[in-house]
Amino acid sequence: MQLSEMAKTMCGKISPKPTAENLATAARAAQKTKGLPPVHLWNPPFCGDLDMRIARDGTWFYLGTPIGRFELVKLFSSILRKDGDKYFLVTPVEKVGITVDDAPFVAIDFTVKDAGPDQEICFETHVGDITTANSENPIRVVRDPETDEPAPYVHVRAGLEALIDRKSFYRLIEIGTHDMHQGVSWFGLRSAGQFFPILPSAELEV
Image (cartoon, rainbow, N blue to C red; front, side):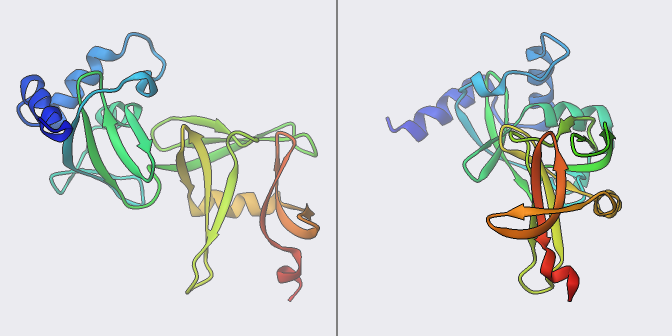
């Protein structure tokens, strides 16, 4: 029996068909503390893809319909894992693939601690995750090759990023500064002793 067939057989014994309801039940059962479940330690069989999608604005869809319950979205986000370039919902008993249009999270707000050279920028996502921009959780900016419009992201955890929403990005620009990056002056952001470049200083002078 091939590994793929073996996995399907195991999934069939555990859950005849992966559904959002089954995943939610398994995720709740696995939550032993208030912290995030240890999804990185779980290695269940892959049970196929689920018709679940996270849109660019952070909205979760199941079978084409938005998931309206915040508690359910937060629960699913807690068992989200990225393996390579793909996203999965993982419980101790099954692993299913989902679609993510851009980043799985959206950073909707931030606070600045100790404003100045030693400041720390702390972001909050739309599902309540908190992440401080630092060497482990960098800010990066991707510019659209056609429109040149910037898309800023901040790392949240384990390869999962949050797209920084527009209003927050505008506020970040107001606290930006110029610093050297790879021998060239850049405009960017400082947080937790790190400098995160946004665009070359020369482009602001044009």
